[in-house]
Length: 78
Image 1 (cartoon, rainbow, N blue to C red):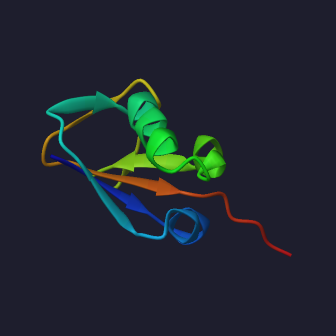
Image 2: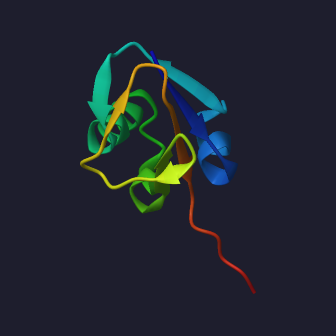
């Protein structure tokens, strides 16, 4: 099981902060596709910074069962 955490705008659009994926291993890019299929309104997922166990990760990095994957949307300031 891979636990996915969504923050800020992503959480608001999905209507939930956590998503659990029953998989032993998935690339970040595949998790993004999974989330877009489950929540089509999450179009901003492609601009979010992914992290695995609190370390930023690229799309090709694999998350394993027991990992926490977080997507942090870009922050704009003014």
